[in-house]
Length: 210
Image 1 (cartoon, rainbow, N blue to C red):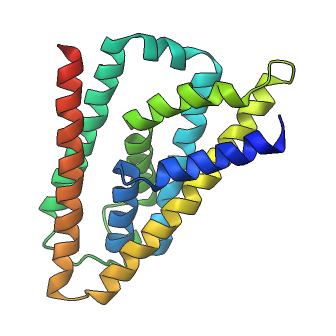
Image 2 (cartoon, helix red, strand yellow; image 1 turned 135 degrees about the vertical axis):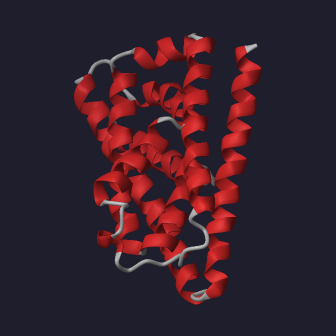
Image 3 (cartoon, rainbow, N blue to C red; image 1 turned 30 degrees about the vertical axis):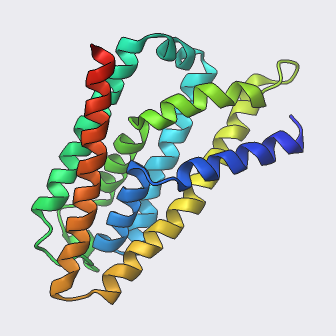
């Protein structure tokens, strides 16, 4: 595997994550509600999802899933349903202070935060469409396949952390600037954004299931 394909894949990964989606909105939300450090911790869930999805592609199941419109739509529906659950939860707690420096004392444990980020990332339809479509182009059949996919997974994970770190810092910064009564509007805005994303995914899934 040459340097140019690796650089190209890194660029594609950064570009794909930079486009606003469920992972980005959740990173901003976590940054605004719990602060940058806890939001950064939640990125472990996104990194774990990268390794899971790329492992699935490496084993050949990604192509099988793409070939089945029904199962791909069912995955979209599940992801959209969970995103809707997160959106409703965000809107229900929007009346609370956005930035919470006492995060460890709340009911949102680090394990729960990582788990939520993992579920949002691993059920993101964009990732299921992107990885099976582009990963094979960066793998050489005359070199160890497992090692190549492992390297690609590390690059994808680093790209996600790089982009999400920026968005999490943005959310934390916004919460500090809007501390006080106006801070609740941050959560409301992100809750509405998540609600819009989940609604769009649900409508798309229903259209494919027909």
